[in-house]
Image (tube, rainbow over all chains, first blue to last red; front, side, top):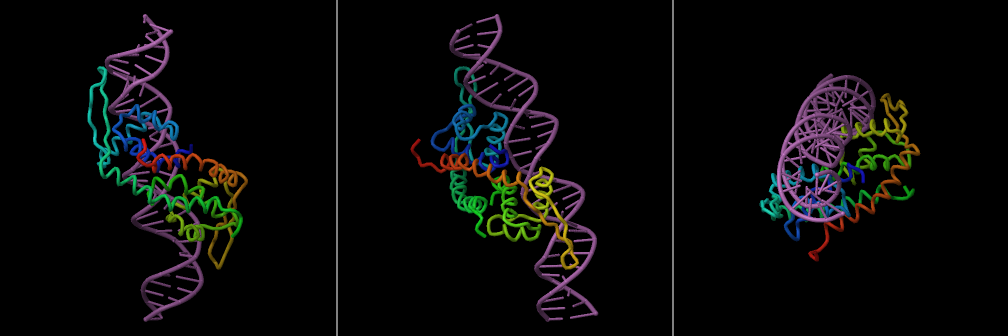
Length: 104
Length: 104
DNA sequence: CGATATACATCGTGTCACGAAGTATATAGT
DNA sequence: ACTATATACTTCGTGACACGATGTATATCG
Protein backbone atom coordinates (compact mmCIF):
# COMPACT_ATOMS: atom_id res chain seq x y z
CA UNK A 1 0.00 0.00 0.00
CA UNK A 2 1.09 3.52 -0.78
CA UNK A 3 3.27 4.98 1.97
CA UNK A 4 1.60 8.36 2.00
CA UNK A 5 -1.84 6.86 2.14
CA UNK A 6 -0.87 4.85 5.19
CA UNK A 7 0.42 7.76 7.19
CA UNK A 8 -2.82 9.14 8.42
CA UNK A 9 -4.18 5.73 9.24
CA UNK A 10 -1.36 4.17 11.22
CA UNK A 11 -1.74 6.00 14.52
CA UNK A 12 -5.44 5.24 14.66
CA UNK A 13 -4.85 1.64 13.58
CA UNK A 14 -2.52 1.16 16.51
CA UNK A 15 -5.05 2.69 18.87
CA UNK A 16 -7.73 0.41 17.44
CA UNK A 17 -5.43 -2.56 17.99
CA UNK A 18 -5.24 -1.92 21.73
CA UNK A 19 -8.79 -0.67 22.10
CA UNK A 20 -10.39 -3.88 23.34
CA UNK A 21 -7.49 -5.22 25.32
CA UNK A 22 -4.01 -4.11 26.29
CA UNK A 23 -1.38 -5.35 23.92
CA UNK A 24 2.35 -5.14 23.24
CA UNK A 25 4.49 -4.28 20.25
CA UNK A 26 5.09 -7.62 18.69
CA UNK A 27 1.46 -8.64 19.00
CA UNK A 28 0.19 -5.38 17.59
CA UNK A 29 2.25 -5.91 14.45
CA UNK A 30 0.85 -9.39 14.00
CA UNK A 31 -2.71 -8.29 14.68
CA UNK A 32 -2.50 -5.47 12.17
CA UNK A 33 -0.79 -7.55 9.51
CA UNK A 34 -4.00 -8.49 7.65
CA UNK A 35 -4.83 -4.79 7.33
CA UNK A 36 -1.54 -2.87 7.24
CA UNK A 37 2.02 -4.04 7.36
CA UNK A 38 4.28 -1.96 9.49
CA UNK A 39 7.86 -2.50 10.57
CA UNK A 40 9.05 -2.62 14.14
CA UNK A 41 10.89 0.68 13.83
CA UNK A 42 7.70 2.30 12.60
CA UNK A 43 5.55 0.81 15.32
CA UNK A 44 7.80 1.75 18.21
CA UNK A 45 8.05 5.27 16.86
CA UNK A 46 4.28 5.44 16.74
CA UNK A 47 3.87 4.00 20.23
CA UNK A 48 6.32 6.54 21.60
CA UNK A 49 4.42 9.31 19.86
CA UNK A 50 1.05 8.09 21.14
CA UNK A 51 2.46 7.87 24.65
CA UNK A 52 3.82 11.40 24.49
CA UNK A 53 0.46 12.69 23.35
CA UNK A 54 -1.32 10.81 26.13
CA UNK A 55 -3.27 8.52 23.85
CA UNK A 56 -2.00 5.49 25.75
CA UNK A 57 -0.15 4.44 28.89
CA UNK A 58 2.60 1.86 29.23
CA UNK A 59 3.24 -0.83 31.78
CA UNK A 60 6.25 -3.13 31.71
CA UNK A 61 5.68 -6.76 32.55
CA UNK A 62 8.17 -9.59 32.76
CA UNK A 63 7.10 -12.52 30.63
CA UNK A 64 9.21 -15.68 30.25
CA UNK A 65 12.33 -13.79 31.27
CA UNK A 66 11.75 -11.20 28.57
CA UNK A 67 10.37 -7.75 29.01
CA UNK A 68 7.05 -6.85 27.56
CA UNK A 69 5.60 -3.39 27.42
CA UNK A 70 1.84 -3.47 27.54
CA UNK A 71 0.03 -0.51 26.08
CA UNK A 72 -3.31 0.65 27.42
CA UNK A 73 -5.54 3.11 25.60
CA UNK A 74 -6.64 6.26 27.45
CA UNK A 75 -9.86 8.24 27.15
CA UNK A 76 -7.99 10.57 24.86
CA UNK A 77 -7.04 7.65 22.70
CA UNK A 78 -10.63 6.50 22.51
CA UNK A 79 -11.63 10.06 21.64
CA UNK A 80 -9.08 10.06 18.84
CA UNK A 81 -10.73 7.00 17.33
CA UNK A 82 -14.12 8.68 17.49
CA UNK A 83 -12.67 11.79 15.91
CA UNK A 84 -11.30 9.66 13.11
CA UNK A 85 -14.70 8.16 12.48
CA UNK A 86 -16.09 11.69 12.16
CA UNK A 87 -13.39 12.59 9.67
CA UNK A 88 -14.33 9.63 7.56
CA UNK A 89 -17.23 11.45 5.89
CA UNK A 90 -14.75 13.97 4.53
CA UNK A 91 -12.48 11.22 3.27
CA UNK A 92 -15.38 9.52 1.54
CA UNK A 93 -16.38 12.71 -0.24
CA UNK A 94 -12.79 13.07 -1.44
CA UNK A 95 -12.90 9.51 -2.66
CA UNK A 96 -16.11 10.14 -4.56
CA UNK A 97 -14.56 13.22 -6.14
CA UNK A 98 -11.58 11.18 -7.31
CA UNK A 99 -13.56 8.17 -8.43
CA UNK A 100 -16.36 10.09 -10.08
CA UNK A 101 -17.20 9.31 -13.67
CA UNK A 102 -16.85 11.76 -16.52
CA UNK A 103 -19.97 13.74 -15.77
CA UNK A 104 -18.96 17.38 -15.20
CA UNK B 1 -8.52 17.64 8.20
CA UNK B 2 -5.62 15.75 9.67
CA UNK B 3 -2.40 16.52 7.82
CA UNK B 4 -1.22 12.92 7.70
CA UNK B 5 -4.53 11.70 6.42
CA UNK B 6 -4.36 14.18 3.57
CA UNK B 7 -0.95 13.17 2.36
CA UNK B 8 -1.88 10.11 0.42
CA UNK B 9 -4.89 11.77 -1.11
CA UNK B 10 -3.52 15.06 -2.36
CA UNK B 11 -1.59 13.88 -5.40
CA UNK B 12 -4.55 11.91 -6.67
CA UNK B 13 -6.94 14.77 -5.88
CA UNK B 14 -4.90 17.08 -8.05
CA UNK B 15 -4.86 14.53 -10.85
CA UNK B 16 -8.63 14.16 -10.51
CA UNK B 17 -8.99 17.94 -10.71
CA UNK B 18 -7.38 18.06 -14.13
CA UNK B 19 -8.79 14.78 -15.37
CA UNK B 20 -11.72 16.12 -17.34
CA UNK B 21 -10.14 19.32 -18.57
CA UNK B 22 -6.79 21.03 -18.38
CA UNK B 23 -6.56 23.45 -15.50
CA UNK B 24 -4.11 25.79 -13.78
CA UNK B 25 -2.91 26.25 -10.21
CA UNK B 26 -5.25 28.87 -8.91
CA UNK B 27 -8.30 27.16 -10.37
CA UNK B 28 -7.29 23.76 -9.03
CA UNK B 29 -7.15 25.17 -5.52
CA UNK B 30 -10.62 26.65 -5.86
CA UNK B 31 -12.05 23.50 -7.41
CA UNK B 32 -10.65 21.33 -4.65
CA UNK B 33 -11.68 23.65 -1.84
CA UNK B 34 -15.01 21.90 -1.10
CA UNK B 35 -13.12 18.63 -0.64
CA UNK B 36 -9.63 19.52 0.59
CA UNK B 37 -7.99 22.80 1.37
CA UNK B 38 -4.45 23.14 0.21
CA UNK B 39 -2.14 26.12 0.15
CA UNK B 40 -0.42 27.43 -2.93
CA UNK B 41 2.99 26.29 -1.75
CA UNK B 42 1.61 22.81 -1.31
CA UNK B 43 -0.10 22.72 -4.67
CA UNK B 44 2.85 23.94 -6.67
CA UNK B 45 5.09 21.43 -4.94
CA UNK B 46 2.65 18.70 -5.89
CA UNK B 47 2.37 19.89 -9.48
CA UNK B 48 6.14 19.93 -9.82
CA UNK B 49 6.29 16.42 -8.40
CA UNK B 50 3.57 15.12 -10.69
CA UNK B 51 5.32 16.68 -13.66
CA UNK B 52 8.64 15.08 -12.72
CA UNK B 53 6.95 11.70 -12.45
CA UNK B 54 5.25 12.16 -15.83
CA UNK B 55 1.73 12.20 -14.45
CA UNK B 56 1.04 15.47 -16.24
CA UNK B 57 2.43 17.90 -18.80
CA UNK B 58 2.58 21.69 -18.64
CA UNK B 59 1.84 24.40 -21.17
CA UNK B 60 2.26 28.10 -20.47
CA UNK B 61 -0.40 30.43 -21.81
CA UNK B 62 -0.66 34.21 -21.60
CA UNK B 63 -3.99 35.31 -20.18
CA UNK B 64 -4.88 38.96 -19.50
CA UNK B 65 -1.22 39.90 -19.36
CA UNK B 66 -0.58 37.29 -16.72
CA UNK B 67 1.01 33.92 -17.20
CA UNK B 68 -0.99 30.80 -16.69
CA UNK B 69 0.41 27.30 -16.61
CA UNK B 70 -2.09 24.78 -17.81
CA UNK B 71 -1.69 21.23 -16.62
CA UNK B 72 -2.72 18.26 -18.72
CA UNK B 73 -3.03 14.74 -17.36
CA UNK B 74 -1.08 11.95 -19.08
CA UNK B 75 -1.95 8.29 -19.49
CA UNK B 76 0.28 7.60 -16.52
CA UNK B 77 -1.71 10.09 -14.51
CA UNK B 78 -4.96 8.42 -15.49
CA UNK B 79 -3.42 5.08 -14.54
CA UNK B 80 -2.50 6.48 -11.13
CA UNK B 81 -6.14 7.36 -10.53
CA UNK B 82 -7.20 3.84 -11.47
CA UNK B 83 -4.53 2.41 -9.19
CA UNK B 84 -5.87 4.54 -6.36
CA UNK B 85 -9.36 3.19 -6.90
CA UNK B 86 -7.95 -0.33 -6.61
CA UNK B 87 -6.22 0.57 -3.35
CA UNK B 88 -9.48 1.79 -1.94
CA UNK B 89 -10.65 -1.69 -0.96
CA UNK B 90 -7.66 -1.96 1.34
CA UNK B 91 -8.39 1.42 2.87
CA UNK B 92 -11.99 0.45 3.48
CA UNK B 93 -10.96 -2.72 5.28
CA UNK B 94 -8.66 -0.66 7.48
CA UNK B 95 -11.54 1.68 8.19
CA UNK B 96 -13.79 -1.20 9.16
CA UNK B 97 -11.07 -2.50 11.48
CA UNK B 98 -10.83 0.86 13.19
CA UNK B 99 -14.54 1.53 13.35
CA UNK B 100 -15.55 -1.95 14.33
CA UNK B 101 -17.72 -2.39 17.40
CA UNK B 102 -16.62 -4.08 20.57
CA UNK B 103 -17.01 -7.61 19.35
CA UNK B 104 -13.35 -8.53 19.74
C1' DC C 1 24.30 -25.88 18.35
C1' DG C 2 22.59 -23.00 15.09
C1' DA C 3 18.45 -21.11 13.26
C1' DT C 4 14.20 -18.91 14.10
C1' DA C 5 10.82 -16.46 16.86
C1' DT C 6 10.06 -13.22 20.36
C1' DA C 7 10.73 -8.39 22.03
C1' DC C 8 12.34 -3.77 22.22
C1' DA C 9 15.50 0.33 20.86
C1' DT C 10 18.11 3.82 18.05
C1' DC C 11 19.95 6.26 14.06
C1' DG C 12 19.93 8.20 9.60
C1' DT C 13 17.55 9.25 5.39
C1' DG C 14 14.26 10.75 2.15
C1' DT C 15 9.57 12.45 1.45
C1' DC C 16 6.34 15.79 2.14
C1' DA C 17 2.72 19.63 3.67
C1' DC C 18 2.86 24.15 4.79
C1' DG C 19 3.76 28.84 6.50
C1' DA C 20 6.23 32.87 5.17
C1' DA C 21 7.72 35.88 1.98
C1' DG C 22 8.32 37.54 -2.61
C1' DT C 23 7.05 39.12 -7.61
C1' DA C 24 3.62 41.00 -10.68
C1' DT C 25 -0.84 42.46 -12.83
C1' DA C 26 -5.94 43.56 -12.89
C1' DT C 27 -10.06 45.15 -10.77
C1' DA C 28 -13.19 47.04 -7.41
C1' DG C 29 -14.04 50.17 -3.77
C1' DT C 30 -13.71 54.71 -1.43
C1' DA D 1 -5.51 58.67 -6.71
C1' DC D 2 -4.96 55.29 -3.50
C1' DT D 3 -5.76 50.99 -1.45
C1' DA D 4 -7.40 46.65 -0.96
C1' DT D 5 -8.39 42.34 -2.93
C1' DA D 6 -8.14 38.81 -6.36
C1' DT D 7 -5.40 36.49 -9.62
C1' DA D 8 -1.11 33.72 -10.52
C1' DC D 9 3.22 31.57 -9.80
C1' DT D 10 7.86 30.74 -7.05
C1' DT D 11 11.27 29.70 -3.44
C1' DC D 12 12.97 28.64 1.21
C1' DG D 13 13.02 26.59 5.64
C1' DT D 14 11.01 23.63 9.01
C1' DG D 15 9.02 19.93 11.31
C1' DA D 16 6.65 15.51 10.99
C1' DC D 17 7.06 10.95 9.81
C1' DA D 18 7.74 5.91 7.74
C1' DC D 19 11.23 2.84 7.29
C1' DG D 20 15.53 0.28 6.46
C1' DA D 21 19.54 -0.98 8.93
C1' DT D 22 21.52 -2.35 12.92
C1' DG D 23 21.89 -3.78 17.60
C1' DT D 24 20.70 -6.23 22.12
C1' DA D 25 18.85 -10.22 24.47
C1' DT D 26 16.24 -14.50 25.52
C1' DA D 27 13.56 -18.81 24.42
C1' DT D 28 12.46 -22.65 21.54
C1' DC D 29 12.86 -26.12 18.05
C1' DG D 30 15.10 -29.18 14.95
